[in-house]
Image (cartoon, rainbow, N blue to C red; front, side, top):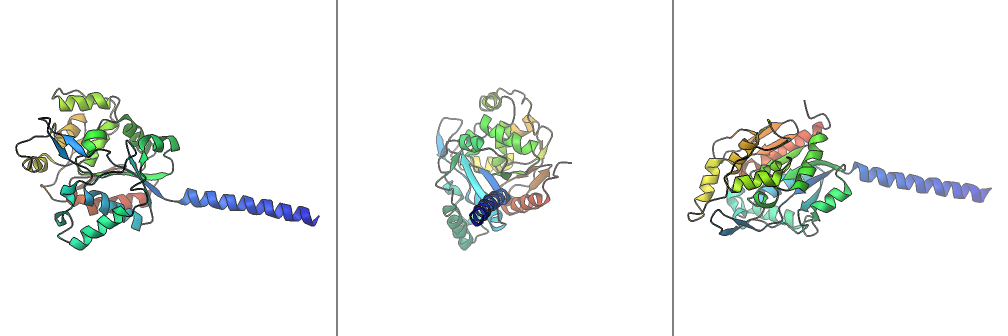
Length: 287
């Protein structure tokens, strides 16, 4: 009899332990971060420049999320570690504060997933239900492999369907173009100056922002006469985005339903603030 009671208590204890483990996992708040695999970008002439994510555009919102208790899961198309655009490693994007710049560099270097980044295939195979939001930093790199990527489209459709926050900053919003029926065809039309209509774009009619044409022209002025293949703001407008812009280099964040977009590098803190506000309001985001 005593042996039976002991066995029963042991079984109940194991069951409770498993339940607590599952509960702890289920309650863990996670944000998926989509980053580019690429480190160089081809210009209109065929010349290339180095690229990657912008340090502050990734680091400032990411640190705000971690400080608020969220775990970040990093993913790139190939599953390789994302690269920083060295042009962004300057105090100009940190209010002139070298200490803040170094703090963000250290924060990113110490992220658990920074050198063990998942591929998009791995993320999709594991499922997206565990994530509370998706965040897409900028830098020009997303123009290469995130704007025409069917896997990105699948990820974005999930967050759109589930009314979960989707936040993107500077060039990050170009990623939204993947959430249409034929993203590769649309992207090709942009690079060949042969405009076609976006098909079944889930963000058609959304209010949004992205790096503006005047800001892009300033960037192009540093390229010794070289030009980009297309301007992101024009691409988003052509697809059906209702674009809003502040004056060049001024912070600007636009919120429409579950979508949060920031115009430029100086929108980093404001975007983080709006994302955390929206996460606090889940699950009833769409009106």
